[in-house]
Length: 465
Ligand SMILES: [Zn+2]
Image 1 (cartoon, rainbow, N blue to C red):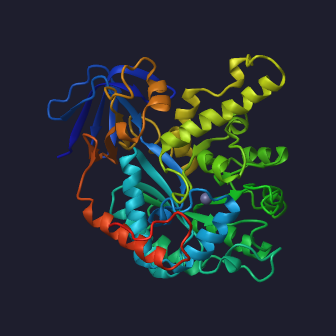
Image 2: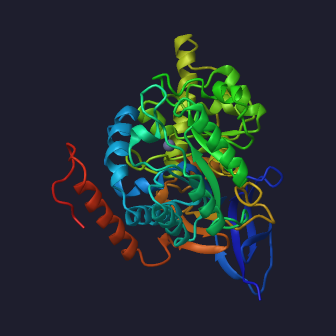
Image 3: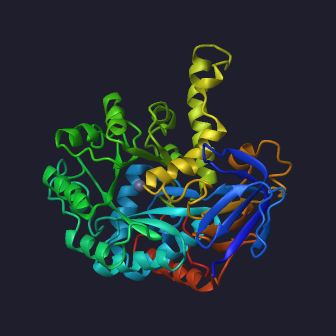
């Protein structure tokens, strides 16, 4: 006997180009799937959720988050990228125990669900031991979130794992046997709730033989690559795509994270290889990577996913990312008109708009995560990954343009209901289930990790639990 749910009378922003935006619409869900979307749907045996005056969207997709850093949330509010490498990856990461990874992944995934993120790409470069990998996967599994577990490299000593070409020393490879084990043991089903990717470092971060090994490992495992590129102006992440091209490693469906300083020919390489970008605008602006080049990608038809990157330094929800990209990409265009003394009257076609931003946070994000066949839009046949935004809230009502309401007005507090794979994980503004255990775990993890590194100015001396 299948279980049916009918979401009634909502303002439904399907993100499906064929279905568009509908008001007073219903969504019928059967088990884990969306069955139909339309007006006046009837289903006598269905559980009904009244969405009158509320806004229904496909769940947000966070296309790149180092979820293991949830334990050390906001420990580094003022850091630039360079400071981050030294403090977070050099000092905190080697201290992580499997329990810390478990606590952080579970709490980070719960944070996602609470914020309406139904798919999380967990960029997990904390594979310090096999037990760390087990803990990371279990942390995701225990919450019910949809995720792409991007298996990365250990962070036991930054010099051994990131640099080496220009900085001396040798760079270690991802543990291929471990990646194969995780693929076999947990993530062999490419249609499961958790699927697998490979989180690599790439050209200029590693010597060519290491790069080739990791790219070929991804091909052997049949999984997509996600890699940080062109993310600073120091030089070593510049021209990484040119180097990949020279090595014959421009694979399709690769996610190029940040891409702040890609050169023109490199943008064409992203497009022509059938790949995509993940932009973390709040982090990129705040930490100094560069502008988040969403408009450049959009004009080339390259899917843009938004991402939160690191909880150490900014908030990790998609409302924050939408605000950051909307303001920064328009701000850059406004600057041109100010400089040209055009009174800000650039043609509006040169400005990104709220509907693009919402698509990036949902459908395009699903393309970036490689799972747009099953999520990212409210489309019959896709998995039921849905979010209901409270249209009556004090910061949302009255609704006139519902996309404007989601992109410009709403925040995490307005996420009323979250469904992943047909299962309700948040209802009436509250996560389902007891948070006390996961909260206790992550606070204990914080206490331990903070005790293992030199205290920073601004940290409180005794930690409340
Ligand atoms: Zn990152």
